[in-house]
Image (tube, rainbow, N blue to C red; front, side):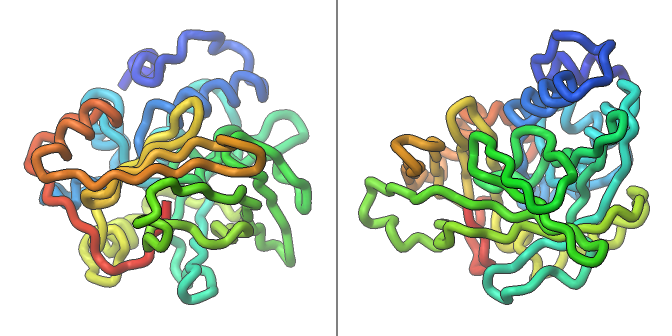
Length: 290
């Protein structure tokens, strides 16, 4: 594994010497613009492995994306190799349907400490919930980023990531009630503690998420990639393009339903993904918003 190959993968060719917030922010922004959040291997019949070598080969050499257990594991290696003090943390994702956080630790995120300050780095939550830059680990502070206002809140040792979203304008009237649309302008995303974790602690949930019929990842095939102005999402055959702050405090969300023969071309042209096996798109009934 060669970190120079990773930097080429994300198109980053600036300073690698300074272990400061500016460099960390630049690397993260290049990362989210280059590496999709996706679960396509599940719907191609390919098992997802968490070993660093497997993740590196998939994301860097094969120019794929992945879910948080893969992508943030790679990002942990990158930042540690660069010299940042980096810690793996475990998150509990909020369900809008159940109105509660998951009982199992299903999300992998990172904490990076620079001097006396710590930051949350998460390159793999995807869709319109994706942070674009490190978030200072401070409770109750609104942190404005391109997608929305994010906020961290601490209560009794548990941290919560929330977002304050803009309104949405959907020109295609037939999609106004799409199950993919986030309906709330205030959204809980996930909770976490600062207890250090290891990748081995996510092995069982990695198997569960890609095999259980209860998992949203087996219910839906999806791929999302941030752009300089918004985010593209493909769920099953439904392609959306969101432009952040299209007009004052409003995002534009455009929908398109693809034909089977269009899916591979869209993956290549928009997400820069070429699959080794045939994808079987799926839009199941598990709750999943973009």
